[in-house]
Amino acid sequence: MSWVDSLGFCASFAVLASFCMTTIVPLRVFALVSNIVFSACGLLAHLYPVLFLHALLLPINLVKLWRLRKPAPGAEQD
Image 1 (cartoon, rainbow, N blue to C red):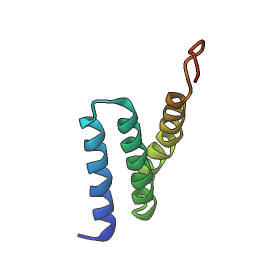
Image 2: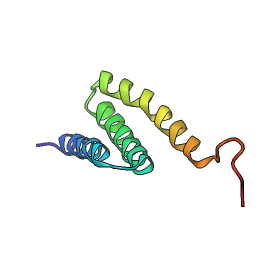
Image 3: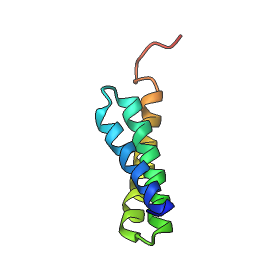
C-alpha cells in the first residue's frame, strides 16, 4: 500500500468520524479535515473527480462553520 493510499484511508476515517458526531461543530471540523485530506489525495493520485468534489465542499463547510460562530440576529451579546 502506498502512502497516498494511506492518506485516502485517513480521509475516509475522518468522514466516518464526522458521521459519528452528535453536535454540529465537531461534525464540520471533521468534514473540513476530510475535505483537505481528500483534496490532497485526489491531487496526488490524479483522481480529479475526488479533488473537484472536495475542493467544492471545502468552502461550503468553512462558511457553514463560520456562520455557527456568529450570534443569531437579535441575540443578546455579552
